Length: 167
Image (cartoon, rainbow, N blue to C red; front, side):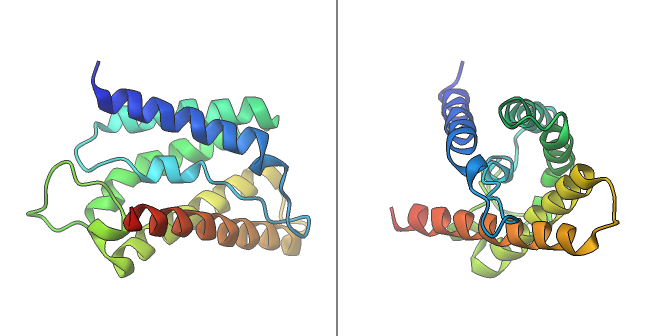
């Protein structure tokens, strides 16, 4: 097995533990919950097999669902994000770039990376909270959950990316 698999497995465990033990219990203003595990799915390199991205995302979502008692919500939403991530990433990468290029603030630049990550996190939050509430009877609560969680998740992701670029 390659070293990349073990790195990815270690990241998997770190994101699951962070979400299950700390971030899953944070609810700012009763609406905004950081969903940092979405960052795991957005970090797959350009040439990673699509079945691999889908498998990792489904396992991550299923594990998060087990710990947070949300049957199928994270698994369905992360798998949907994983299905579009490789195609969406190709929109922002130059055609002549390396096949192993990972999406990051340094590799894509601030503007392209911002479009990439903001769009994927927004789609994830929309899917997750639409499936969770499964009703639009309280549209204001749904909107507060989507926007609040999206903003706090993006703040965490950009903090990690800036720290990663400084190292």
